[in-house]
View 1 (cartoon, rainbow, N blue to C red):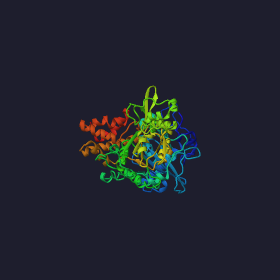
View 2 (view 1 turned 135 degrees about the horizontal axis):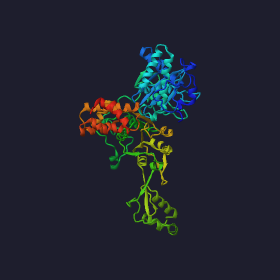
View 3 (view 1 turned 90 degrees about the horizontal axis):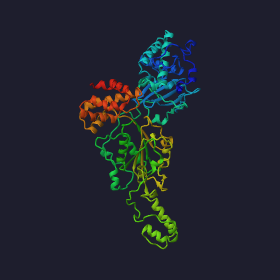
View 4 (view 1 turned 30 degrees about the vertical axis):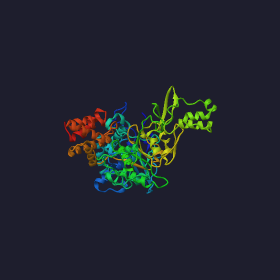
Length: 601
């Protein structure tokens, strides 16, 4: 099996850092194997230079933090909630900032050289970055393993005492390197012990942008060891969301003085009393309204986040705040551009706005012989001045009219209807475009770029050109970190006016939402259940359980079921536990580590 990018052959040829640079410690060894080294006929362990640099840096950082002698040049390892592991790794004259997504295994990184405030790209490869910064960021993840914990404790104790027994330290180093190597390379076969990471074969790690730093998208919420200097805490959206009164929000951000029809009024969402309006929703409405007089009003918005964090309710709340009708389109792997811009459906024979007594369309010979008669048949109006061109123009109007197009196909008439997206664009509604990251063909959304550009037009399959209404708001919602999700095309991202990463609500907000939705009045019990769900989500991330979901929707189902069964343990097995994973071993682990801490059978 080919090695991953972090363990390619060139990385084993790099110089081992001191004090393990003694030649007797080089090459593959017949001892020092980890418990995960059981594949193949010859089991050996090898010191890996990038891993050793990360281990030495982490041990030095941990010792200094415990002794109270920490200095900025030792780096820092921390996290943003349970979603990201974050580190600043110092080497030579640069500081590498690394963000690791616990749900996807993907990295985001940037290099800050010689005090330069602008991050540079981070690329793993021979003659470029060795990957030590990425491994350094993963150290708390590796430490969840019992063997790693034991070996690392001895390793850093030896460092603290200035390496009194190098042979013993070498055994620790071998076993640590082998533990990391096997758990990453064989992650798929090691279940919870595996550490699944995703590094592109090109070695090009997604860049950490200055905008992401300034906006606090990856602002740490805590540090394991050290203090952050570049990715400063407290700037992100991880804190409890600010809420607003419904009366001060609904309908307060209208974009124009238009009057809605009765049908359109019914399409404006009515926010339930229990809904807590988050700050991100209010900010979107503020930006949409206050930029309306400008030449480039803000009308495209992106919400990213885990399932159940309120992205769709947020889109509906935006429509309520703007007092605009709300429409929805959900994408799938097979979605094509034709699914987004128009649909042809069988014609039921209902009135389509043209003469129902028309029968078959006239023949070309009839038009040539007497255009006024044909025009009368089409419109009911006789006019001797009508020419062949007038008749053809009326035929085209009927064929690609505003309401329907009819075609003859095997005896069945079909007509064109607007999709919810085109309807929103035509009439100025709010349209939520769900899960575009699931679309298999990356070029599909690119086909909508002309519509994402404000006040532009798109040509429908009928030939009609539709201009985007100035009130049209498009809200893209996506679970970009889930299995089957792909990165949204950069050209689409660049057309988003605001991008919000929606995090899971804090415990108090979770409890309040679920109690309001379900009608449950036992706040103490719901708080315990919410704590279990939060712990389960964290456990799933730590152990790379990615085949299920554990969030607000699952908590709501658990509470509702418990109201029926009166047994939270029993209900948990068929709601939150069953939803978290299809693997029996994973479910057993979640029961023992999370559920049974609060509830016992």
